[in-house]
Image (cartoon, rainbow, N blue to C red; front, side, top):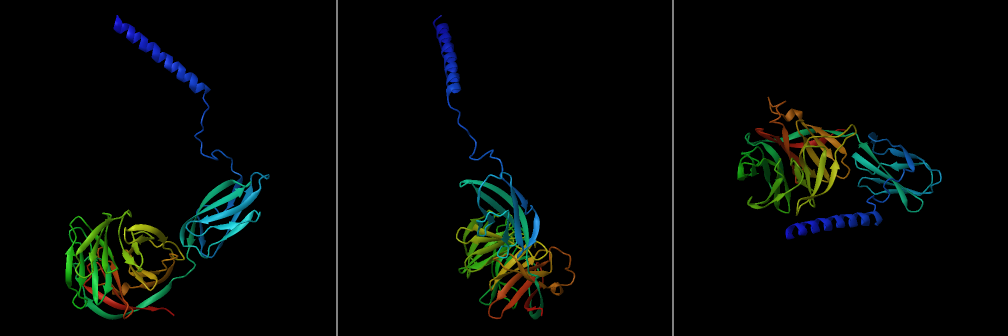
Length: 368
């Protein structure tokens, strides 16, 4: 009987608490979870530019709009063009112009913010595509010398320094880093990567060799002279293709039209540039080499090199190297042109390809 009375008392107590809490909720003030400005009606109708408009650098982009509420006082309009400096307009006109001459090429998201009634804003985002305003200069070449090259080397990265070539090769189970005697094409030193890694591009930075891998998102740092591994590092970019250095940063390609600017100590991405010419994007950027403020890049599957302004992403030139392709290799994606190294003493390039039996020393010649 005692236990029954206890259960009855507990039930009555729970009912009373539920009733009390429901009363408190009814009388308590309701806190809004809405974000500031949520539900505020738009006050500006943006007429132009329209999303996905294709423009050319140098074009003046008209920002046209109408006020949906004629009573608002428009204080200013600010255009935020991606990572470029914002442009502020203080006039009260219904059309302003954003200049694109100093912008990078590629896909740009304009954020247009209208400031009105002292402290309120109305924001609009528009995606645009900017083509280069430069027609790439054409280059021919002159063969200076031919050297033997290991036809078992699936060349992924190539760097010249102090009379030697540093070469990275790919494929799982066959990937390596080598110091190569140019005259013979034979490795003087070589280290093999663990079999799970597919070696990709390399770059020389502060007397160390950085090497990235294809899909593992792991890279390695080696002593330049001994090829002893110093440490490994991870990165967030999904695929590693090409790698080079401008002396301060590392620059990486991932097989797209993008170049990633990398901080060398922790291999963190600090910036990104898209590569476009006057007709559109240049995808499949592969092995890359920084030369005198410009980047030369192989385009995977193609027999030409593009010359890129790394500050804007504009393609400045194009060198067709089709005639260097060994007989029978054309159309074989396992034997494409790949590998660019620069000799600063002569100004010449060393170029080769995947499993090519020959390395060429060439001089690029700009067309008149």
